[in-house]
Length: 507
Image (tube, rainbow, N blue to C red; front, side, top):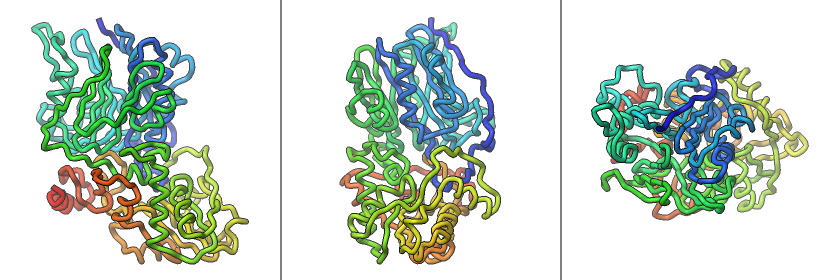
């Protein structure tokens, strides 16, 4: 018999809005990080902790793991960072041969314990746990089709778990029969639309699933000491002593059990259309991650090199906005011949806070995170390289600090095209009304930010810098062409008709 236990009492952390959004950090936020391991004889809870720690950048609202010893499936989750939720005692008490883990940043559903993952469902005497990275675009239609009342679905992962539980084949006593989890997933997955990378487990199997477009990354590795691992990004494999086997393919369901891995493809072939989120390479993924076989740091450095060719300027110093703007700044300096140096120091210990209600308060928030190196900056003409400008509040405050520190000129170079359209596939972005590039021309943005010049990398140069010819990307946040249809209800910004119009253009 398979039982389950719940750990940790949910609570709300100070400093979070109930919806988990509108933080004073002006950068887009990814949805989640997922991890899974099947390794008999290994400390799977410790490996999951280490894997989640390597994926902490993908979500800081909540963390959790589910562990099975073949008899009992235990779920422990809570609000906060991985190190807030798990300590040595908690991890040591979780014994088993199979585990999944999740670290969350909400793009749908509120930031509460109820929506922390993994989610668990019991079917008769069996049960399963599921962790999700991404956003479904047909949640409302799925819930309505299943007869769920409006407001009863807490999150995409909650909905998927419920649909999978209902799809289990059961006998007259309601007990699961046959190959329950695999068969249920095979029924449910073709119904889902949007972005989803899942890790799923029952008492003896680890399953990884990637949507037919492969919007969100998911990789597969083998432990050097024996066993198998799934993770959102390759550094999590490195951390636990696994080597990369390959990326899970778009539209693939990878099933790992005592006999090893096997692959199933539950989606119709016509739906398979690889569209990895291009922003993973620009900003979201760790620089030591590998995507499409390319190390992200090298791609970002090449973005800076192409930016130097595309938008040269006479200056004394090239500096990157820490941390994600630094590789592109290195590339810009290398190609331009302008010396590279540090201009800003980042406070690495600051936590997330509410978005400030006034420009003055936002500027103070930026000062808490960044501080200029005055001796490096004073009297210099600066090239400042960043990966994106969303609302512009952070960039404007940063430029003001550089001016106050004595910079004579500030030339902003952005290593991606303007971010002008919301994402509906797993990144938390503002509505289109709040995206500066949706409302203002480049020259108007330059004036607002107070820089001497402004240039964005072109999409053509961005793709060339990544260096993965023939690979597909989703660039909807830059072009407005959405690969998967987005219902008007998801627009939420008065632009729903435009969204659908563009969606149809994108096929």
